[in-house]
Every structure is written in structure tokens, then in C-alpha cells.
Length: 331
Image 1 (cartoon, helix red, strand yellow):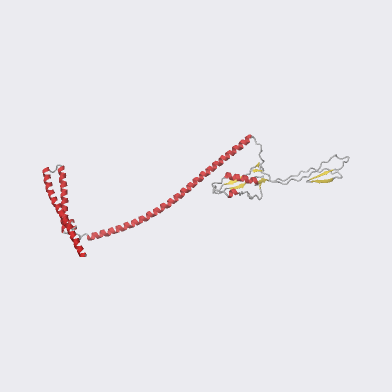
Image 2 (cartoon, helix red, strand yellow):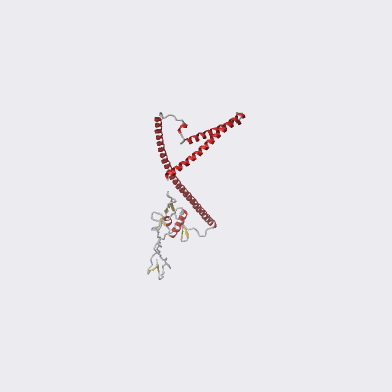
């Protein structure tokens, strides 16, 4: 610190707590054997604990130790927290000289001086005056002797180098603290994102479990119904006779039955012609036999198709007559 334009050193202890740097450190002044803490100091209590505005307004990551020490240097420069321990004054007085006659004391300020107004033979021409000067009141002095104001170039170069190194260290500390702060913010954001995704996964797992339970319930109901149907079939299958597939579906009238037979014959002849044609291509059927069978089958297919066409016309006319009868009945 600088007190009255003179540089002094103040010993302090800085305690970094577990919550540092989010919480401010604890700072104590450490007086040596020859130092005493200033009584009723506005920023230092009797135990040496320092309390200043910078500590009260500590905010991470803006606050740091370098700026804290600088603020303490300015603060202690206004009023030093330590001063040198006073030593007991030692008064050394010379032995009193013989008092000549006709001596009157003369008081001047803080000193007492006795003089002989007249000279008398047989005595010394002058007597040594006796001065009693009181000590000035004790003042608080700084701790260490000041540095010389006229430093040599080597000291000045060393001081400049220390200042430059201090500035570089301060910048590195600020940069590292900012990087760590950014890393912590990134970690906190990642932690929040993971927490949200964890909740989403838990919700998805709950939904899947509910859906699984519903499907298992439906499966159990389906298996139960299947068992019921199988038991019913086993109990009633014995009295059921095997029915002809052609007798299962019956036409609605005679015309529909004849039309169904004609279409069936037509399609059957079409399949036979396809098979004969395939055999002729593979040289399995002679050409004369192929032509004979094709002529017979084509003739038969023609009659079936002509009959089917007449049956369709008859169905159309029958439907028209039925519609006319229903219309006359309704009217």
C-alpha cells in the first residue's frame, strides 16, 4: 500500500473456503511481534478479520483475488490497520550543576533554563543551561521503512517486470476463470437436458408398460374365446355331414341356373383349348388331331355362349316386366 506517498507492506492471511470462488474468502491481517492492530478500524476488527465493500459485493466470476488485493491496498492506504508497537521512552538527564547564588528560573515554552544575570569573580564565566524538553505525543507509524524514491535503473526495471508479470498472471487467471465458468454452464445445461430426457424416457416406458398390459389382457380374452369356440366345435362337429360344394350355393331361379351352367361350360372349354394349344406347340398332339378337337370344342363353346346371351336377354325382359308389375301395384 501507499501511505502519504510512501510504500509499505501489510502482512495478511487469505483463507479460501470450500465454496470458493462462489463465496468470498476470509482475510485476516497478521501483525508481527512489533505490530499492533489499529483500534476501532472501520474495516478490521480486534481479531484482525477484514470486512470491506469488495467482500460484501463478491459475485462469481466477476470478482477475483487480484482485484480484492488491489482494493485492500487502496483501503489500507487511507487508514493503515497496523502500526508499530510503541516503546517506553527513556529519559536521560545529566547531573544537576551547582546552583550559584542569585539565580532566578526563566520558563520558556516547554523548556526550563536557568541563567546567572551577573558575573562574579571566582565563578566560571558561563554555566551550562539545564533544558527539560518533553517527548512529543506518539503517532502511528507505518510498518516497514519506505523505499527510496530515487531507485536505480535495475530496481526500476525489476519493478516494471514484476508489474508486467502480475498483469499477465491476472489476465491468465481471468481467462481461466471465464473458461471454467463457461464449462460449468455447459455442464449445467447438459445436466438439465439429460434430466428432461430422463423424464421423457420414464414417461415413454410407463406408456409402453400400460400398452403391454392392455395387449396382454386382449390376448388373454382372445385365447379364452378361442378355447370356447374349439370346445363348441368338438361338441357339435360329430353330427354335421359333409355337404357337396356344388349344392351349397343355389341359383335364385331356373334362368340363373341355366346361365350358370352355360358360363361354367364356356370357361371349361376355354381351359381345354389352352391345354390343347400348349400340347400342339410342344409337338405332343399331331396337327390333324389338334385341328379336329379345336373344331369340335369351338362349336360346342359357340352354342354355350349363344345360349348364355339369350338367357341374359330373357332375364332383362323378366326384370322389366316385374318392375312394371310392381309400379302398377304401387300406383
